Length: 518
Image (tube, rainbow, N blue to C red; front, side, top):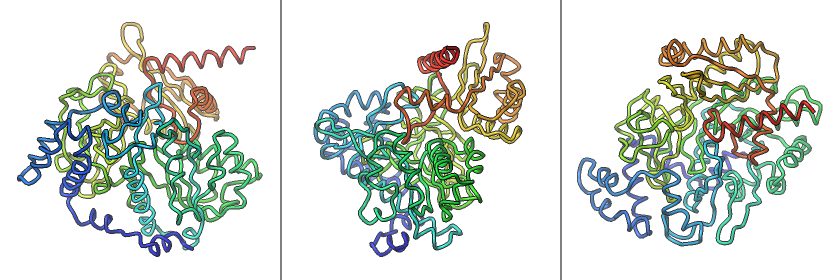
């Protein structure tokens, strides 16, 4: 039975999609905040921060409701909201930040910090994520796809659905929590199926998927680029294929998220017989925020009426310190006050019990009318040692350009800012299995960054004195992640390394060198 037909036969309504189509972003978000505040008004958080007073102001004109909300509720980093509130929910306390008891906590991939974060996943958030997933599936009707793809399976490569039981709650990777709660009607399409999805050992899971691949007709693949590429390489090797289309001729769509796809694009294309559609999603442990709504547009549309209220903080020195920590009195805006082309960090208030919570991503609006965005980086993943203001977006683009210059594949890289004499340098660690001249690579990366970023160009003639480039095998990056227990699922390699994480990475590289000597 075709998946679109199944959705329609099951009576899945598209009212929310039409509502977003025909309502202003401000009106949608005002209604969303009101519904969230009503739902949580009797929680401990809602009573402490006087949600009742904010709710009373919704009848008044203008934006009194938003002024009061900002006045009552402080901005929360993870450490603040976890220390003050979420840790109580972890102990099994009911009605902390959202009605009822939280039974699931997603362990975030933790690219910025050494330890994992515990993000609450409520029943309401699970439902919201499923509804957004359905909205995304329904947008496939805009693509030029043959009917066969809607009959084929969807391979979702995520964390284990075998969750850790911790007394009053279960913990695990968000993709594992979501896969364990897949609706009954979807199970016919879902691969690798419940049995393999439970597997905790990542290598064993990939082997089982590779072994069973010939039994499935896959039309859509969903997952983080690095692990999907590794999986496809394993399948091709196991079945002695030239490319993945020999075993999955109906594969036409790859849905990705979590990191920029650009560094992986060239490597992917080598594994395919023909082009496929790449569709980007913005699915975080905190919620399903956005997805690509239009073919051939490398942007995503924010979901404005499904359990999340957004605020936007200009990503500027007055709102963030040098380490990417937000100021308690940072300037925040609603969606009707933002500007196209300007960088903003996102605050979320959600049906998972996040309130004015800094998610850590930095975005840019490409269309205010359509609420379309691109992700440009992370609040803590940028380099500005001396005013160069280098974003992850700049880094990704430079790597994409040098990959084309040298016709090589660079799926992984990371950058660190380091002292250099009395001034500064950037140290690049570039992952590729192709041969490349390190000196030429360094010169090209530097050249492209100067063209992409005026501040960088200025500082390269001033305080940013040197660029250092080390070329490493791609496996080194994944071995480091494995040493941290961050293999598979939603885990990503950090694009910028600072402080203790950088020390740890350098120590790991030193042990690799010493190990190779013996």
